[in-house]
Length: 159
Image 1: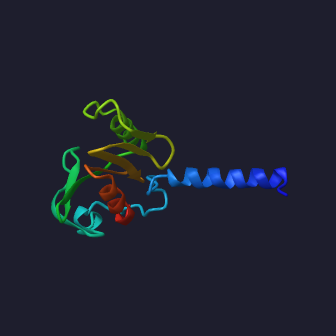
Image 2: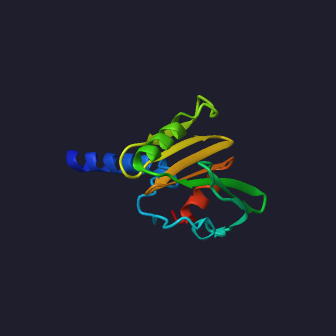
Image 3: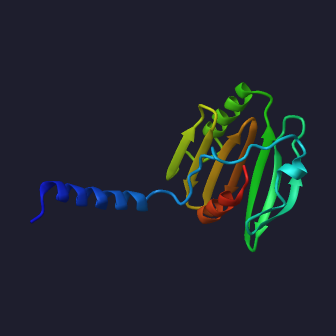
């Protein structure tokens, strides 16, 4: 005979299993990742990330983002990056990333965390996947049309 405690435990475990199946494949907070050092962008931005190879890179200049273009087979993605002068400018940059009017108003998933030391913005819908984050004063964002590609790329990106 089952006790009420055992029934509650079984229900709790089943709920936990159901909830875990809906957790994204990748957690977008980059808190445990390294913080870049210096401003030698050819050293900071990796030539390869997992299966992806960097095919072109434009370094940041005059308050403009740098861009690195990565490709694997038919999949392409773009990483924008720069180093901000101070925490105030980084926060402003992240708030702008979270409000960018160029992005569709309705996204299937939207997560914004623009306070504290580790900031990130996530927008996802079929055909559009965008993540922006910081490591220290360094800003990065990635845009791709494929969520699985984004997740795999970020699992291997060092920052």
